[in-house]
Length: 168
Image (cartoon, rainbow, N blue to C red):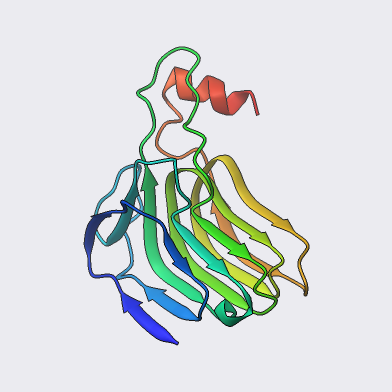
């Protein structure tokens, strides 16, 4: 396995990060808020690719820790809807443990998709799923999640965003 360490700052992701082997991605934490701030922030403004994909049994055991994610969406207006981005994290056919911990999903359309994963485990996740938080299907073993706090943070006072959230 390999460790990839992201230092503090805002990093624009311009292409997909795909792995078919074990890897550990570690950030420098994050400070909660409705916009990118202090800590390690992965910035996303392109909906044509899945930011992080882990595929195959050799990717089992991958880990992501202490990273914040932010996606760009249109400005608020009547009838506002978020951009339909793919999930930030896509786990496919790993058949083994995958660990996601202490992540902040700020202004994110879809958080995590896991199909054919095994023992996917997540905790201390915070943020606002604008379309979908988790999509787990065909789990090959029991998954475990805990300490998840999802809310319409930051835009609750905006009437257009409020109308979108209220339609859920």
